[in-house]
Image (cartoon, rainbow, N blue to C red; front, side):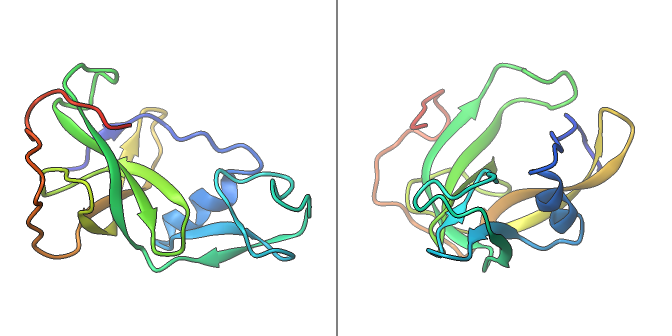
Length: 151
């Protein structure tokens, strides 16, 4: 089932990210001088000030460092509840997306999942989501179905 989602912002800096996602590639802007990833994309590196950058591929793997369950509807066509996770990629940058097919847990190993979707402006495309990398058993005592936030 293709879900209707809010149209992503695609300004001059973000457009390249979304073009790669449409091809099911996870790439982020990276400074050619100090090798620091820039996310969100920026005109200059926040560490060294260099303006040159290239879009480097990421492995698409990481682990959950924060999560929340949305019980309130912010978008009329997106059914609740749904899990939103902050993922620290293996390369370092933090990316946020929905967690598909698992209850959220800190430390959960995940991999990117490109979801085909229809946007509310009538266009179609892909978005970056997350799914469990392998079965994971948390040692935490978190209550997974309570409206709790670690973001």
